[in-house]
Image (cartoon, rainbow, N blue to C red; front, side, top):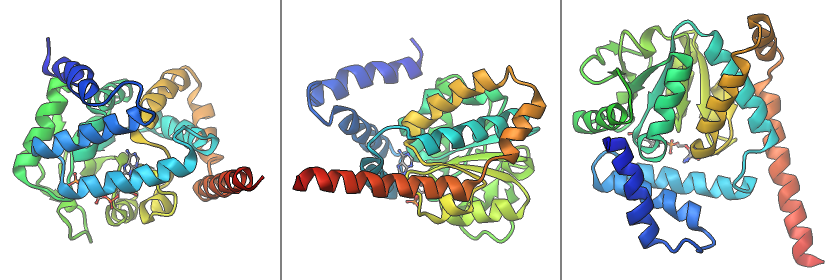
Length: 270
Ligand code: PTJ
């Protein structure tokens, strides 16, 4: 049994023993446990817990499901990744805790490189995350000993990137990102795909394509769409990208939330 399978066993047994299966918030509590476990094992940043809580709040607002605007963004993201020459998937602590196996699977499907890139970078966390990805089947993980290049005009630890990865990438997938790096990557001429539950964040507003959805739903759906869209002509994929308008999609998310809240408020007062 590989260590990745070990993790799955652990999820099934330990977490499920802690949280009663019939708990109405079972799925959500399970995700919390994964983040807490990552913190205890030393690869999730303390701020990762706060980021997760913010994500939970926005997930409530969209009804904890993948909404139509996110599906549009997923299609555009799949097209961009398939068309990319040097796609790279950036991995941080929360992603390693929530979707390690799924992110490796997506990377394989689109021939993308996996690179560990952390806001709260420590060499110990980098190594632990790389180790998790390898145990989940990654052949190569960048950003460990080779984070020798620098993203210009970026002063956080996130500036440290691999010259074989993010530095030369044309398309970068950045789940749970901070706005600064998204803007800096855009300035370098890269196409940035963000996954962020907060449609108002600077990351969401500055990425080329923003999937407003939980990474635990978005990554498997993106892999599924990649499989389907791979069968299409490249010109059709280019059309999907040409017709994609990120501001419009973000506006649709906000409208969706407003309408949902109006409906919920009506229900309470009828
Ligand atoms: O592992 P490190 O050191 O790189 O640190 C990672 C965190 C997440 C702590 C760091 O990047 C950070 O501080 O991020 P922010 O600025 O808090 O932004 C995180 C964004 O991700 C917020 O807008 C959250 O709403 C969103 N978010 C949180 N959980 C999820 C999420 N989006 C999608 N899926 C989630 N599960």
